[in-house]
Length: 153
Image 1 (cartoon, one colour):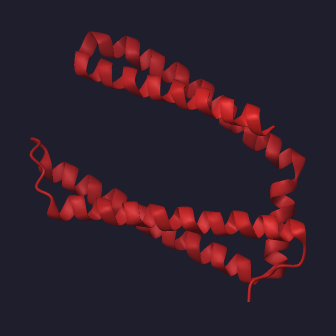
Image 2: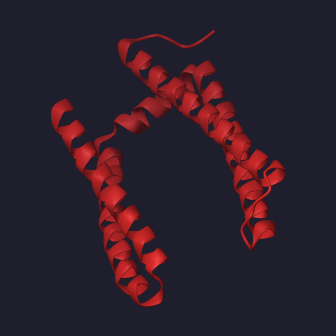
């Protein structure tokens, strides 16, 4: 039986259940990656490397998602563990640390991508364009997430 004692408890339950759904989606992506690495003939000059990469990443995703699902299902069945998680996640200091970490990582990623873009221009146009697209998608994600957060807060 699932734990549901308070309104706040239901909120943490919803978050944990959502994490389980995300883990299932990652497991499906892992299975797809293993299938690509195993069954799809890769036409690139380094097909063995690519097949090994897809298979390895897929197995890693499957393992991580199964562990996450097991951990979260156990948490849902244990009222004390669920309460501890709720306290941990609602702690203002932990939330601030998480926000600052994402913020600093985002700034660092933007700068690193831009430096890579400058260097890649001297190496190969295809690499430069790829990094430019990644930089643009990153900036677009940042813009969209800002607009969403502005409307929700």
